Figure 1 (cartoon, rainbow, N blue to C red):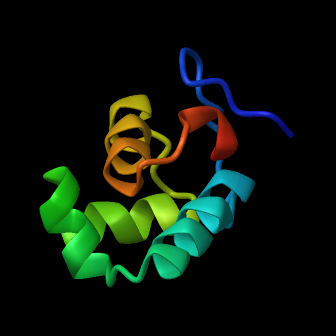
Figure 2 (cartoon, rainbow, N blue to C red; figure 1 turned 180 degrees about the horizontal axis):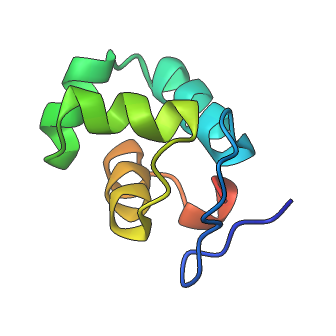
Figure 3 (cartoon, rainbow, N blue to C red; figure 1 turned 180 degrees about the vertical axis):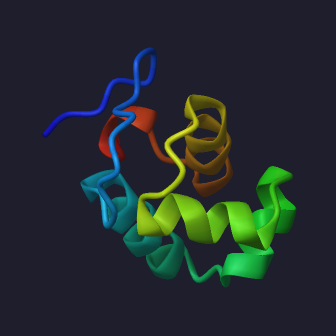
Length: 76
């Protein structure tokens, strides 16, 4: 499944592939959830929601990819 930033998947799927990619990129970068939240201006709950696939807000995905210094296309 591919998720578009302009039209994110809005179904009830959890553990979305983009969420797993965000979690892996965060871990590889050495960030905790809390540290990444501070870095990109989101809450720890919003980061956790992105990672578990329950949040697919394009703005949040873009902020996280910018904070992790990775292309958005590598997450979605």
